[in-house]
Structure formats: structure tokens, C-alpha cells
Amino acid sequence: MNEKLVVENLSKVFGTNEVLHGIGFTVREGEFLSVLGPSGCGKTTLLRMLIGLEQPTDGKIYKDGRDITNSAPFERGMGIVFQNYALFENMTVLGNVEYALRKNPAFKEKARETAEHLIEQVGLAEHKEKRPGKLSGGQQQRVAIARTLALNPDIILFDEPMSALDVDTRLSLRGELKNIQKKFGSTMIYITHDQEEAFAMSDRIMVLNEGKVQQLDTPRGIIDHPANDYVERFVIHNIQLKIDSLIQFARTKV
Ligand SMILES: Nc1ncnc2c1ncn2[C@@H]1O[C@H](COP(=O)(O)OP(=O)(O)O)[C@@H](O)[C@H]1O
Ligand SMILES: [Mg+2]
Image (cartoon, rainbow, N blue to C red; front, side, top):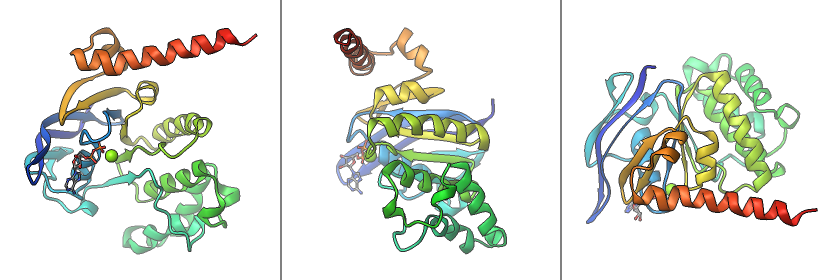
């Protein structure tokens, strides 16, 4: 598989707070890579540097072999989906998805057509004339995903996109995201603090803690060969606890 994104020795210091220390990893073309770590470990900072909203203190980022460390966000061919949807409330669903397309000369001509198509792809055709506030959280997040897909990014970044959603919605959106990835062939980098989510969705998981990569491997590889005590205690142990409580729950049912 091709190397889509290569990150070398990436560091970020805010004042005296060194948030990320020499992070290095590679993302393959078409891969679904999760970045799994506790709150405050630097996940959002990493994502913001990848997309160009934050300048690294040190290190390099290459996409398709090209050094993009200092490129502007719009030159990077990446899209991002946030936890809080960030939709325009004064526009319809269709308007939200069309908006960025209309502003871009390369997409302007077919803005309506493309937006309609994407809204259909995420299963919201019947809601396209509604305002975002009239939709459920899961539907709003699907609008945000359609809007991100609109500019045809080859890498899509997700910053804890399911955090605000209830369990059922999370489960159905998981499946949908994987379908979208297959359909569009996008490379996805998915930030989460939820072990179960990372293990259910990812080709590979990068475990991040205290600003350092603890392990980068397939879910199977992590379970079979945890790299250190942190991975063992906070990743695998937590999953085991969830499984145990599910079994316990099932036993209480007749
Ligand atoms: N713009 C900023 N200025 C100063 N400190 C920041 C800034 N952004 C993030 N931080 C700090 O960096 C650390 C990591 O934050 P963040 O990347 O948001 O972690 P996560 O997304 O894993 O919860 C935190 O200690 C946070 O306070
Ligand atoms: Mg964050």
C-alpha cells in the first residue's frame, strides 16, 4: 500500500508546555487509522497540525511524498469533521453542503448536483430542505460529513465526531462511516478516547499518551502484543472490563 501521509519527529510546545514530543507515523492510502488517547494528551493539537491550523514547533509532514509542513490548510486536500458539527443554522441542509462548493471555482458549476448526490449518499435526501436544528445529532453529524466530502478531500480527519451522540446513533454512524470510506476510497484519521470505538473501526490504532506514541499496530497486534504497561492497563484492560460487564448484563436477562 502507498504511503499517503508521513509524519516525522513532530513536536508542539505551548509556552513551557511541551504537548507532543517527536511524534512519527505513517498513514497508508485508504487506511482507517485511529488516534486513541485520554483527554489532554494532544490529539486535537496533532490533528490541527496535520490540517494546517497549528504550526509545529519541530518536525515534518509529507503528503503523497510532498512536504506540506508549511502549506496553507486549503492546499492540503484534507477535510475535517468536528465533535460539534459546526453547521450554519441559517441555511438548509442542502445550503450547508453547497456552501463551500459555491465558493470554489473548481466545484461551482456542479455545486447543486454534487451537494444533492452527497446528501443522498449519507441518507438525508428527505431532509435536505430542513434547517440543521430540526435534525437529530446523528443526522447533523451526517450533514457535517457530507459537507466535508463535498470538496473531495483524499484525507478526512475526525476529531471525536461521536462524542455528543447517544449509543445507538454512534453504533449506526460507525457502520455508515466505514461504508462512506469504501465508497469514496478516502484515507481516514479518526481521533477518539473510546477504546471500543477504535478497536471496532480501525485498520490500525495509534495509542497516544503524554504526547508520545505508545504503540501503532492493528487491533489484533495490540491485543496480542501490547507494547508496554500503559497499553496493557489502559487500553486492553478497559476493553476487558466492558466485555465483562456486557456478559454480566446478559446473564441478568432471562
Ligand atoms: N492553543 C493552545 N494554547 C496553549 N495550550 C494549548 C493550546 N491548545 C492545546 N493546549 C494544551 O495542549 C494540551 C493538549 O490539548 P489537546 O490537543 O486539546 O488534547 P486532547 O485533544 O487529546 O484532549 C493540553 O494541555 C492543552 O491545555
Ligand atoms: Mg481534543
